[in-house]
Each structure stands twice: as structure tokens, then as C-alpha cells.
Image (cartoon, rainbow, N blue to C red; front, side, top):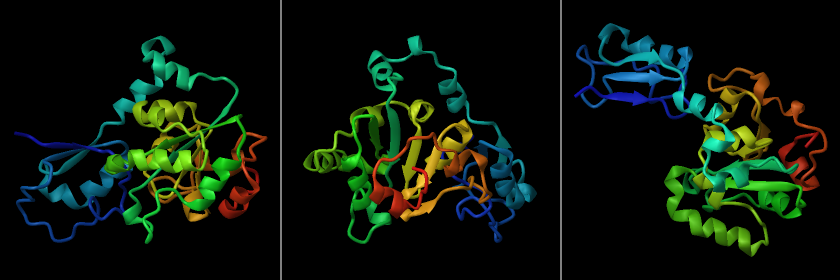
Length: 239
């Protein structure tokens, strides 16, 4: 049985699971995929740099991202009616918050940083917040809902986790995250600005560590001002 791993997140030459393997046995590894489907040439090159002597075993091929292409070309009539309602352009600004497993990031296990919660609570009805959990956080779904309800924050958690990611990104005006590889997905769409708010830094690079014009925070639409506290903490001068 031939095994193929389809790229599903950030890779590149600084990713320890995919790049710079320096002691590979001549026959390769039984537990690694026999082939890799990479989104872009540089992700494939990072794998082939060490796997070339083993080809065709562990060969990486650039196949693009078919799911992104599919979602990009979907028409409104192709969507679930419930999704259509959530994604409809009604003049509101949509902010997608993508979470990471808290135990991997915060010593106190917080689900959402306090300053992000403050910004969400201070925004008016012209802002719609989508909170999407990492796939490894399914057990935290109700706790996230409880936390937001406790703070009287009308964020949409259900739609944000039911609607395919690329459809959310296609409609989102801003993407906020600590370190989710959704920044790569946003860059692929080329029309979503990402702010690395959880770490108080701008995310202005692609998945290979280079500056990316798609993630220039300076290009955010005019009129964005969710909360002064958020603006200061995230150091985004024109949010």
C-alpha cells in the first residue's frame, strides 16, 4: 500500500518534521510516508533536499492545494443555507480568531488571552467575531462558549467551527492568531490580513520566513478600531 502525506500546515526548511534530516538510512524509513504532496515548490524542496538520494521513496511533489481552489470557486448556491447566512456580506467586519491548544502555549492554560477578550467585549455590533478551535481542542468547545457567554461576548463559535476554513477566510477581514498555520492559508488567499495579536507582534511573513505583502497590517481597511487596549497591546497602529 502506497502512503502519501498531503500537506496540512506550515512546512518549509525550518520545520523539524520535514526538513534537514541528516542521518537518513540508505533504505529510508518504514514509518515515513512513501511520498509527500506539497502545496508549493519550496515546501517540496525542503523535503527533497534530504530525501533525493532515496527517490522515489520519500519524494515530495508540488501538487498545490486543491481544497483551497475548490472553496475559492464555490458559488453561493453551492453552500449550505446556514453557511450562506453566516457568510453573507451585510456590511459588518468579520474577525477570525484561530486558537491553538492552550497547554502548548500558556503556562496557565488560558483558552483566549485577556486582552483579546477585552477587545471582543468592547467592539460594537458592526464587528462579528468568529472563534475557531484547533482540531485538537474539541474537548474545549463548550468551555470556550461558556467563557464568551460569561463575558457577554456574542462571538460565533458554532459557525466558525462548522464552515470550512477557506470559506471563513474568504469572508474574513482580519485574522488573529497566536501561531496557527492558518496564516499560511490566509496568505494563499491573498486577501486576508493577519495580526499575530496573541504574541503582540505583527505577522508579516509567509511560511518560509520571508516578508509577505499579503500580510501587511498596514493595508487593513480604513475604520478598524475595535478597542484602544487591543490596538496598544497588539501594536497595530491603524486597527
